[in-house]
Length: 251
Image (cartoon, rainbow, N blue to C red; front, top):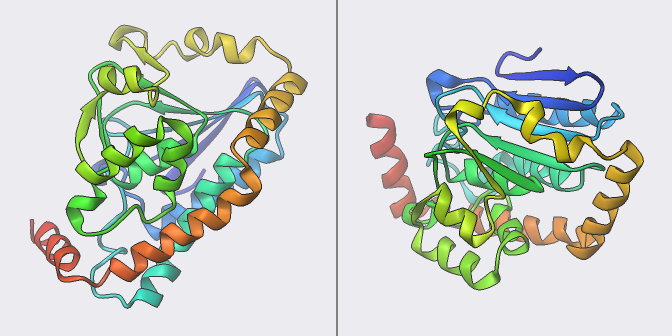
């Protein structure tokens, strides 16, 4: 068990990686990036049918921790700080069996990037999600915008990234970003709503994932994500972004 990320192997069928900083709204710190990477690597060694990523209530993830991702960084410093989490997202996208994000609560910014790296997103009823980075004067910093174009209609991805709206789960279900909305009273019955994913064999899970990865050109995706991280780093020191971070930290 890590300090800020928890890992569980359930009946040799699936593993759960859980963000565990509820008092910080599960904001991604540098320590969390290290632990996420370690557990994604560990999960690859288990013959599981799917990997689940979720958060400790009440929120899935508020994005990056501004104490680590502060505004007083050069473009090179910002790139070096952002890049390790990009690698985590890519390793989730390239995971050899299906990955499922169990959205136990709201997600903003980088939290939506992490969710988008997963193959499927199952959301608790009443949750809300926003790619809000453009409000902050930047673009997604971990390559999540690049991933978004692969997961929904390109014109909707384009609009969402520009408008930086926060949408409820039902709206995003209609747009294809959310795959299933789970009622409150059923949320803890994980094995019930995971049943379709667990009904197939490990070999089938691998086959279907390989097909999907070919469809999204997984080999070229990493370089595209790198470009997005680089663009975010170039915008990092702009006054709009620095002002947002300083205002937020003062709160």
